[in-house]
Length: 132
Image (tube, rainbow, N blue to C red):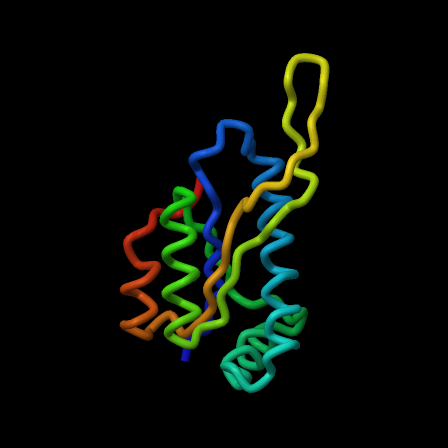
């Protein structure tokens, strides 16, 4: 059993610079933990294995690059297949327009959690490249 949290970071937003992507990935990890606490019976043993894989309780996380459509499809399919999945909604995503910063609501990334060796999970996330 190899539990992995796959974060699906949008690559179709010109404003998503590396710093914003790192912040959004942190939001996705927190959203995953919150989701797992609200649904303890859903993949509970796998979540425990993920958290206990290191003394610091850091589980393996892979950040993959996706478009908005790919993010929505993967999280929807993941949810329907019983994986812990979700979309991160940032209600105050900063968007610079000249000297003005607008804070707009945007779905920035998603997550799907499961066993890396699960063939069904790999059919959902296996074709996405690592985010860079």
